[in-house]
Image (spheres, rainbow, N blue to C red):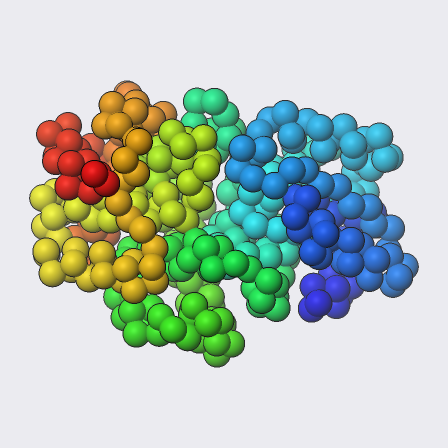
Length: 347
């Protein structure tokens, strides 16, 4: 576990007490082992966990962990180690941002999705009954430890979840990267070390460059949300039974469909986008039990909405987002949303 040596290398510039926060799945896989390894090196480390799943990324869970931290004597001399996937990184990052008005944070992503997405950019937060990630903060980690050995225990669907965000990065910024993902399906799904490390590196570089250009998401950083207006709505409607990656895959194809009319995306590019998801065996049809009215209602609460009208990031070609009046998202006519829904709804 490379994470141990990385954390130990930081001990001289971090506080004296360490709180590992993870979910119950990661606790058994890696959390207890990481705690034992760090404790054996003389660090004061405690482990805190909460149930696995997006439905537990709530204000109530955050409060419960904070109470546990206080009950165990943690204060301003705390460093929080976020160990896990996107849910854990969002939750633990938000706790670090607010606990005693902010304590150092080290992120150790254990999923492909977390490595290429949740760990990059400083976004933290929790879900509410009104929508996903509506309460949170921007809070940068002191260190992000990328250890690909964690990927070996991931099931196929978790690899696919990460691939979705990697495809998105190619679509919004880098057509050559999209080409690489198209032509290395077997290597990436098989976790070939050279291919997966290159893909992670390129994805991180793409997202980092966008974030640096717009840290608080007032402009170009919005393009990272390509596929997410519809994706987050589908997650919410399904009560998070549909994973983030699967929901965003549907959102990417749906918003690519909208891009044909609104952003002049070529139909052959749209076919390539559908084909790459088929190559990775990632479904992209809107599930049969999600109604058009439920989808429209859920999209209104998206963070990009303006005056109750949902807005979408669209692309004009693979690797190039569309700019609308100096902004990177736009509203779409309700009839076009209906047409998209009927084209992609699973019958």
